Image (cartoon, rainbow, N blue to C red):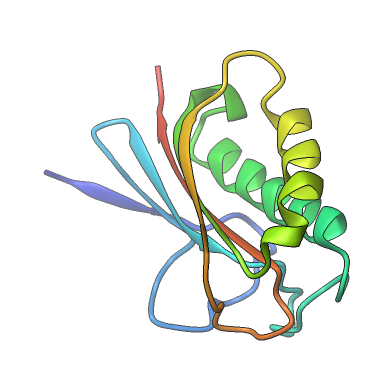
Length: 127
């Protein structure tokens, strides 16, 4: 099965040995996406809504680079640092998935960057 690395233009290098996404058989697997700027610093420290917007905008760029849209996302894995941010995160999440919602799960855990409040990975099936 041939696979293709998906790296959007002007994206920053990952903090570990991975690519933003891999595409195989018209399925896009988006790596865990943190709210990191081009210098690997966490953006919008302390603001779960702003970090969620940043992460989902980054995922959108990756999906579009692969030839898809946010409507093609079928599954999201959501990792949050604090359950107290769950409502704020869901408010932003609903803006990015206003109609047909992808399946998902959400767990609380420690994240690789302590100031990060959210990380999301996605799977998209392109038409």
